[in-house]
Amino acid sequence: MKGDNDYRGPEQWGKLYPIANGNKQSPIDIKTSETKHDSSLKPISVSYDPATAKEIINVGHSFHVNYEDNDNRSVLKGGPLSESYRLCQFHFHWGSTNDYGSEHTVDGVKYSAELHLVHWNSAKYSSFAEAVPQADGLAIIGVLMKVDQANPRLQKVLDALNTVKTKNKRAPFTNFDPSTLLPSSLDYWTYSGSLTHPPLYESITWIICKDPISISPEQEKSICVKCLPKSFRNKEKIVTEVLLRLWGTGTVPKPSIDC
Image 1 (cartoon, rainbow, N blue to C red):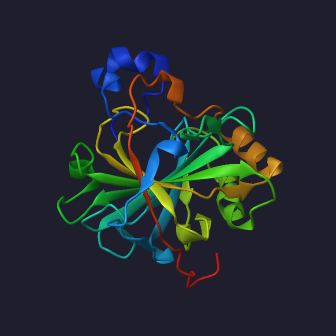
Image 2 (tube, one colour):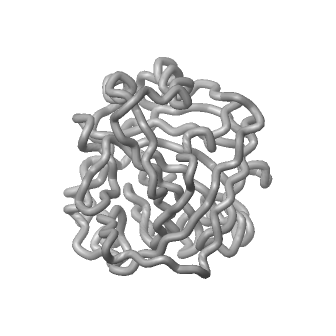
């Protein structure tokens, strides 16, 4: 994606990308007292084929696990979405300490890290590149991560970091169902926002899981050591935020392959 390598610091983005000062920029602080339930929202539905997992790549400020997205084997539907969105990659954001790494916050509380599963609107657009600047182009599931017990479902990803220690290094990463990384309940908040890194397009339907997942101190340390620290955009840099957020429900299917 254009801008992936432009991580000179969020404090510079307003000069380089005027949209950084837009009124639909992400991340936001989710004030739970200002949210409301919308009974018209459907549960979200994820169906991911482990065979579409392709590779892991170090992009400098983070690492991406990329998926084959030339068909509908791995898709997100339902919730606030009116079309089917294909999974193309997932990645993490983290900080230099284990209590300060997520991008989104809840009632001002920042979590240890944040997982993003990135999908594009394959019903309307022919490719991720075509979809990314469009208002309805992308849908991202955000999962907050809290330091607690070790999470064995993360271990395959963390072990793979040893194969991509330098920027632009890539390695095969196959047979992985990312739904195993989701919380057991897919109750969520949703709002319209932006990419949290350049080019900062306001093209995202954000679906933030209400329940966090766990990560042990040792697991989080392995991310910080093997990749670059402080991979998040501060909410405090955002001037405006969405005032109304809706929430709905969902469930995670049991994976067909044990990852």
